[in-house]
Image (cartoon, rainbow, N blue to C red; front, side, top):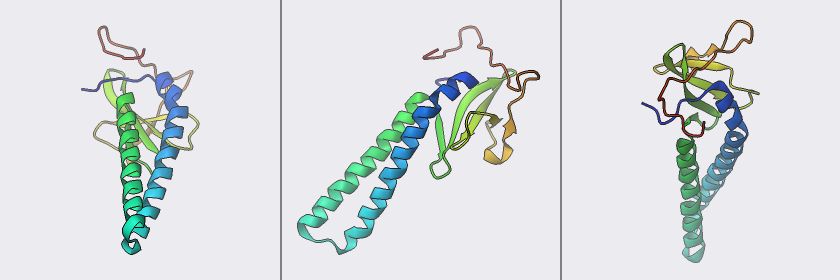
Length: 142
């Protein structure tokens, strides 16, 4: 179903990179909006330069989205920095759910749910679930 199933530790390890990419994407989106706002009045060489800059920024956003997908994560909302990680809890495939600003991945929700159905991760003593791999489960990078 998913190219990668994450443990909590694997998801937490990606957070610095996710923070960097989300920031880069927001910057590119802001610059793209500024360029698009200037386009209607632009003429000649200025218009061509703005159109080229808009294409570049759009390409940058698309490349960053593809990069996130290649990591195996799902960007749900760029503004809030919502990212889901496919995971397994007690034999059930779920999404670990992280929102930018949270220090670690500490929630999950069913595949059919979303942010509103988030539940805290718990496992008695440590407060976090264990994520055992199944024999033969494909786990790139693990």
